Amino acid sequence: MDIEIWQELYRNVIPPKLNNAIVGFNANLDRVITVTSEVIQSPAFGLAEVSELKTRLLYSMQHCRAEEWYVTDGLQYNVFTNLFSDTGDLTIGGQAGIAAVHLASIGVPKVVCVAPFIGRDTVKILKNAGVLVLNDNSGSMNQADTTHLVFEYSPGLVPLAEGSVARNNRFIVSPVHGPESVLIPENSMDNVLSEISSCNRAFLSGYQYLQTDEEFALAADQILLMKKNNDQMRIHVECVSVTDDAVIGGFLRHILPVADSIGLNEHELLLLLHHLDPQNTEYGILGILSPVQLVKGAIEVCRKSGLKRLHLHAFGYYILVLRTDRAHPPVSLNALLFASLAAAHAAQGSCTDISPVGIDALEQVDDTFGPHISPGIFLVDAYTIIIIPTIIAHNIRKSSGLGDILSSTAFVADKF
Image (tube, rainbow, N blue to C red; front, top):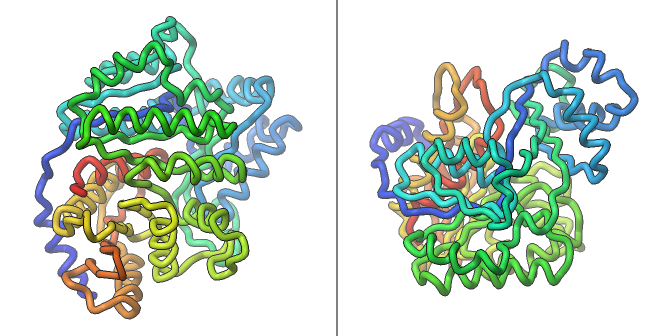
């Protein structure tokens, strides 16, 4: 497919009208550490208590795949944070925190961050960014911040695993938060519903911290209350790479049926597909899927879950699956292009161009599902598929949070 077509489409992106948005629920501080050879060989990484962290980090680097390790032992996590307390830079973290600051910066008229348990410095960053913060009324404004460790790396520091695609990525080390970080306290619900009554979009995350079926059911009930409060509300849930079957099962049984939209990457799509049909070997659980397989898998998740919208961010291209009876393809295409530009800008690279990997992916999808009805837009059964090549930023200074920036931007700019 002609790259000049996409250069023209990117040049003609129209800044969309952005909807008021609520974001929830995980907002924290991130300590972002740039991984170098010196960091890997530093005395801290030679300590026995850091051996598992180092092993997991190197695995992520060998596969150039975003990974997150949820550390269940609080004392062990404190060792990690103390060891790296003088390293890297502190910034806003958590999917909700990152999305909130970004959405306020691009002109979303009202951004409300619902975070039942949040630290005082995180609150300060959000408020300074123009975000309205709603947290637990019991005084969590005075609690200490939670800091996650984000190790950002470039390819080439360690040998790549066979079949891996060289790309900048990150490895995140996080403590396990309690379910109360995702569930709105009962005595706060009326105030939350009042404050978000003018919001038509909700970008929600953090459901990996729920454990029991009852907790997932309560979270789903709270989503339904938000939708009942405003019939124009659209709910987007952002996925994370959790491998716990109980968490994935609760997410699929309770959260997806009440959501409208999901954002995820290739690895997260594979996890959902494997849980939906463990006997299906078409996709595999650790394999690298082709663009055509990703489209088929995305449609499968939408079909089995009832989702109206799925946004998949792969290396070099983005795929959007919309139920055709809810689709507005030109608006959604513009929203994806607008979000791609926003993510490339946030990466703080030295220059940008259109991904050749994305152009190749488009050609593969066109060969299977074509002819396209217009560049990047296809009809497949009951679904409209939109696929665009991404803008690639070179020599980037940031990789963490780009998926959250991309997903939240495309979501608030979309119409469905």
